[in-house]
Image (cartoon, rainbow, N blue to C red; front, side):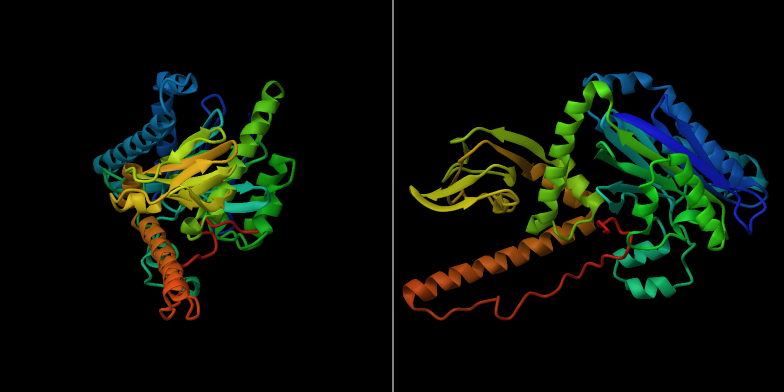
Length: 437
């Protein structure tokens, strides 16, 4: 792929100093937006220092990047590198503040994107954001580290209450005020025609919901896009500094066919994940983490995925192809794309009750128990969403059991369906990362 980029930054209409800083380094594939905070120009120093420190850290470790490009190290090594780079920036800024009383407590947000081949690697602290527009749908890949977002995640505020809150500007995590900082990272696929936006809150605070941003980012001229975004924020108030870095991926002539095949696979995978009942509660970043935890399994027709009576520790998601479910040589069902099986293997050691065999060339995602446990431990909200849907799935399976007993044994039906399922307790505020059409 080729990456095209444009950037723009502006002081806004109410500030006298621009404490935002953006860095564009196509040679490294590194793009950064920082929004500084602190009096007496300290915010400007913090944002510039953070970006330059991350850049220097990555540049000094190009041997790691080259090893990733050659396939000798996994792309997750780049996520580790980016996390360490932002942690180093936080220590650097903290020491500057400790040695100069006028800069004590200064800090900055930071959203950084490293592009290697067909992968994007995000490192993020604060409330600057990374957006992705794919197939005219908008996804927020970063999650704000703010009081409002934490309150929404914990159920302290509803989306309606959050809109009325006076605490929108309270950042709960920043680079520099403390020596150590927790850095969010995310590794995701980039495909042809993806458009990404890194921006400070002086821009995203003025963006409308729904189709506005995808429409703005669809313009072919990226320089015009970045300028238009800054102008729009100024027209709507310009109460803060405004920064936008816009990237777009396009096919390289030499790899156009390979890029097209890869685009098809990535789109199929996420279309399937979005429609798997166990994952319908998940945002785009959460689906990315699930996808990253899975391994791909490709099988020919007639191959056994799991056998009746054997132990298994894997949930399988059917991306393409078909499988049949057989018990004691009796064909029970045929499953197509979007289906899943083996979820109970994540929770119990009970032998599998049926054989699952492919009936065509089939591509599956396999989520093993240890990777599943890792997901739950790293993200309690993702864990809650997954287990909520799993419990509802098991409740509906009890209906099938009761129906069998009613039809075969004449016992009364105890159906959940006629009473309905409770709605999900998880809010989906606008911009949370779910797709917006």
